[in-house]
Amino acid sequence: MAAEHPHTRLRVIRAGIDTYQQPVVYMHRDCAVCRAEGFKALTRVRMTVGDRQVTATLNVVTGDHLAIDEVALSEAAWRAASPDEHACATFRHADPPASAGALRAKVFGARLDDDACLALMRDTVANQLSDIELAAFVTACAGDRLDVHETLSLTRAMVAVGETLDWGDGPVLDKHCVGGLPGNRTTPIVVAIIAALGHRIPKTSSRAITSPAGTADTMEVMTPVALDLAAMRRVVEREGGCVVWGGNVRLSPADDVLIRVERPLDFDSDGQLVASVLSKKVAAGASHVLIDMPVGATAKVRSDAAASTLTDRLLATGTALGLQLSVLRSDGRQPVGIGIGPALEAHDVLAVLRGEAGAPADLRDRALAVAGALLDLAPGAHRGTGLDLARQALASGRALAKFYAICEAQGGFTEPGAAEHRADVPAPRSGWVRAIDNRRLAKVAKLAGAPMSAVAGLAITLRIGDPIPVGAPLFQVHAQTVGELRYALEYVAAHPSIITITEA
Image (cartoon, rainbow, N blue to C red; front, side, top):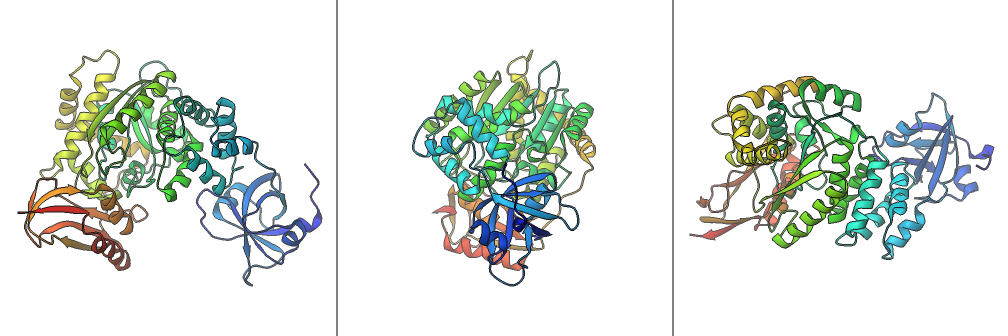
């Protein structure tokens, strides 16, 4: 590495700006570093602070709130650099990422081999690729632009650059939902049932990508989920199962970075979806995996043909990775449960586990179906008996007791809260519910503040075929602030077809 020049030294301060996982540094446009090195906005820079080196994206400050001898670090950059008090940093242009050629080749339509995928994922976790470059990669892989062989290479690369768990002899069960169905929060119920029946199910889950809540978001309103690997292992060894945030255990850290980029783009591809899901299953030590695949016009998987294509890719990749994998197709035409949003979905989960009279039957039935199919997949199982075993575990209270025990092992149980502001959305006419737009319904919940505001979202009890009189509530929007409530309601007013009503 070339020697650093004295004029490239700047005093390090904390910017107090959250740039999520992307390290960003802020310099005044008139500082000696910018002038001498020729740095411009969005330049990729290599920062050295003590014995740490961090690659970051430069943002240029034009006002007078940053001195010309200072560099301000975003929260991600501050964590990565971990500077001492009064620390100074030196800078130079970052070296081009080793995977630059592979990235460029993929953008122009070339196929990725094992080495190219590994180089890309190594640079991804090492922060050698900017968000612009990562967005180019995600876009180049979107649609059907990753074939089956590339999907397998990408999955293996994601596993290789992260941690992996080994649970010893015996089966390790896991499940995943492809997504796109608001409120389909079966995981906490399934984990409780499977663990209550004596099986291991170390479940790592994502936060929301394009939805109003991920499983980790919902679980977090009831118990801590940001456990490290050692803590996760202790919980599983003690209780047989867990539900933790995958981003903190680094089982597939490259995927977590790609998810950050996919979230604002609001799309992914079959290949990336398969690599995302199965890399985490392999890294978590799973041996038997069930994939829940809702299919519907406004779900993530929109048709039977698309479901068949995705199923084939999941099975081919899973088999090549040594997984025993099964896919369960389900109805994806409408939301599941009552609540959409972290706390609202948590209320539904608890209602099902507690056997409350008002518990959403569709969420209960889906969770039982998934748990039953997963139990049928386990070694030595008598096919077709899993559903009855799951029902017994839920009805007897064993699943509830196990859920509480898992929560206590993860750091304690907390009852989910509720939003301060609510408003009903009235039906404009009498008739029958003909269709529900899952995507736009999820958008309403997000505009109301979910998942950033855990108590925000919406509650809906209507289902396709239900009668509704004029003026009766289609759904109820929940928000923590009046502004967010108003924002969501404005969207509803502009999209009257979120729920389609056939006139009586």
